[in-house]
Amino acid sequence: MAPTFTHEFKNQSYTGKTSFGTGVYIDGQFRDGSNGTTIDVVNPTNGSLITKIAEATAADVNTAVKAAQKALDTTWGLNTSGAERGELIGKLARLMERDQDELSAIEALDNGKTFGWAKGVDIAFSIQTIKYFAGWADKITGQTIETDEKKLVYTRHEPLGVVGQIIPWNFPLLMFAWKIAPALATGNAIVIKTHGDASGSWEKVELGLGSVFDALFASAEA
Image 1: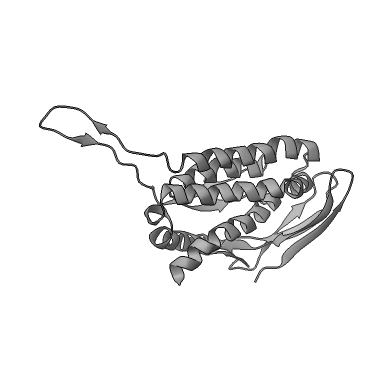
Image 2: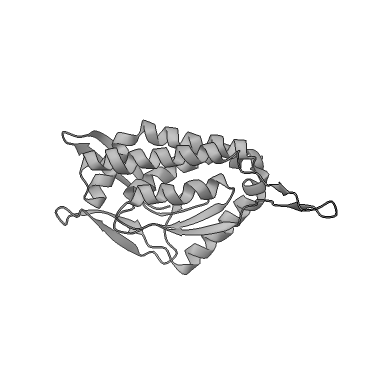
């Protein structure tokens, strides 16, 4: 089990406590990387060490892909209706909205943005993006195209499968939202590589993702 990072914020923008796992997040839990190495997360404003996060290896990626494929085969993808996907993705947006001050403080801490910028741009647009694609999840349909009386042409939209996504350091949570929201709305499973310099807000949101999808996974395993 990977260690948990805990931090007390006490400043004019936000006062509160945050806590989240620092490991590789696979199959609903934080775990140590397979080789036990870590990456330093440094405060860019003063160079101080914030925490250490687990470094994933190729073996960890393979494990994550297998877990994502299992979810796709059993509880996600074509096993879940567009309406259900939209409701779950929308719930994530509501959790982020509830915790937006905390997420903004984390984003400012490990990315170097001001709290106001993080909240007004990064977090606000992330929530808007996730809400937008949650609304599209039950509106993705195929088409029947008229050609002539002897032919029937139609289109059918299906998930691609397990999707690999890479998140840069400059807008970590916003680009996370841009990538996962449409992928999840269309029924894909995802494996994400975050940037080691700015992964705090994403680590926190992983907890939200876990709580949102736990009920779905539990019902499938019962």
